[in-house]
Length: 226
Image (cartoon, rainbow, N blue to C red; front, side):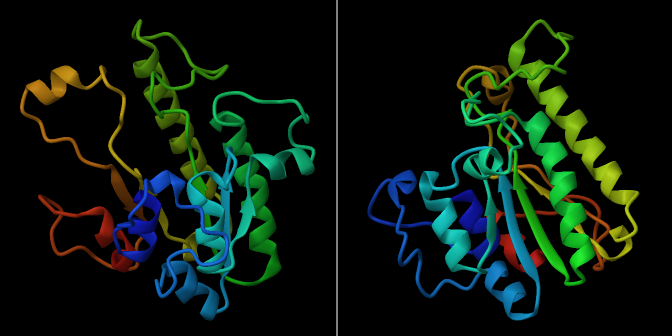
């Protein structure tokens, strides 16, 4: 639902459980996504993720709306990036995902077409997240450690992108697809009255925001904004 909202600006309102909607022939017919727009304008679209893309119908949505090249957990085994029997968390951990992202971005950049590269991290998913080999125990709490570690890796990837020759003409959009579903970690924060939101950041934008403070945004707004 978060991915559809961010890329099409519409709610995934369907008469079945969202994760069960896996139409491989007709996924949200009539929806006009950013993938559709960019494909029509000569962009290469790609989705990189460390899990099986068919979960929740993600593969079908992105293939049918923008003809995305899907590089998922199964692709990683075919590419020889991971062993055939390798399986942790949802497929493989984000530590590997960030390194594979550099490979894919470098390949996309040399083709000569503009590209729309998307990647989906998963280490901070509930419950408790996935502590990778680089996670340090700084807080005595696994989820806290995982969130810090993920933030560090995202930062390092952004910094790597900023060092590339194609960065000047590239905009980076960082977005949470939903607030954390971890049942315990946020209890004290919610009881304090703080209204949790999805995280959004746009780096190297060609547009200038009218205000830097108190901007209100929904998941659906990310589609026209991007």
